[in-house]
Length: 548
Image 1 (cartoon, rainbow, N blue to C red):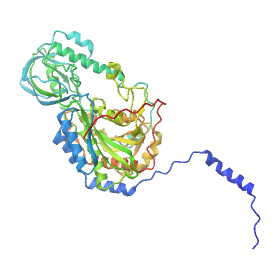
Image 2: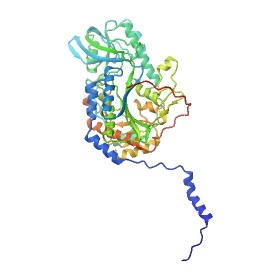
Image 3: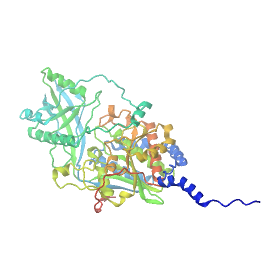
Image 4: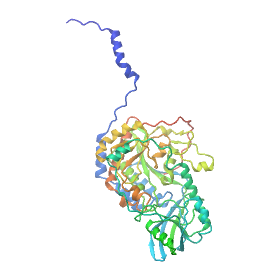
């Protein structure tokens, strides 16, 4: 056989370099995101065929009830969730303390009725941290608008011994949109599109400070003027109304007088009688209690230990606290029941994640994300707390600046996933302007699209506990959920009860959440992080206290 001519080696090298140089000059392409379809199948089967999510939701809402931060019921919820997670086989189930910020308060009974010109029961509930009446009180009703600081001086010396309606009667119109709202394809497509952020946030720190200062001024004014009680008109209608804070949750600050919110239909009757110059008398009996035996508040924490990456973390959770008018079902027993069910599913299918999966159920969310923010500062990162008392009072990781102190666990957290938008099924996830996570989450949604979870949006969403993580540069995410009746009926209202929970939606959300945290726990790399401005780092302080 004739031998071929020897190769022209310089030419070969030149050709190879011609093809290799572009590859050497370009960064390597990211690895293909792997999906554990077998585990997703097991998660789906366990989550849909053996669900405990409604049982958990009933225990939190029916068995315990409203869970105002610092209240005896919040303590019961902390203990019950800790014990239930341990019973399911989770490791290191315990409570972690924070505070002291929020004093305990509970409402024990309320009765409001008209005694003149007619006798009629009226639907009203006391505001949180409002004092009671010390037995039944009767008094004449007046309307004295008190919604701004300027209103207070106009009423000085006029209100002692009276029952005060605090605002004008608003017009109630027929419902012009359905109470039930779900995303359709068009609305999900609109959510996917990223609009430029507004120049000013709708609820700025200055507005937050102004409202708090007015509430203090109002409570001080009322303590000085000594009306028997004050009554606000309820938002919404049909007997549904929102009830939030009245007196101060900080010990030593003014708490005012008994303050209630009344259903607009009953408030309206009284206001119209007053407009007609008719004298109206009410009888009010409110019993409330303050609880100062334990000044600390608590988060519930438990985990499934990791294997080869046990030192790294994936977290999930929701806020366990609620307001007190209902039983805190959609806000946020739903999110907590889903997060707990996601952990139960993973434990039931004998999941052995590479990273530790940790659940945290927060308290203090309704007062300002206090529980999750304290946890982040204890474990991951903090900023300097101002020495000036006024600035310290307004301190928040989300609003404050200064050098970031990164703690050892800062490098170990891959991501935190939060659920807190009611009972609706998960339709996707907010990427919080983190472009690097979009293709990852899109891949994770592929085996879940038949469940209606389809959308990843670059948009930010605010107002709940993922912000505490996002504020220090950690990947914190909130899921997109169907609205259902959240704003129209249940959010902070007397109708936020178990009956408003949707079983199929919560089962679907549990499966999606379990699949997401599993994928995050198993991937080779941590979830990509958004860049933070270059900041000075500081020494690691001593961790906060823990109650087992």
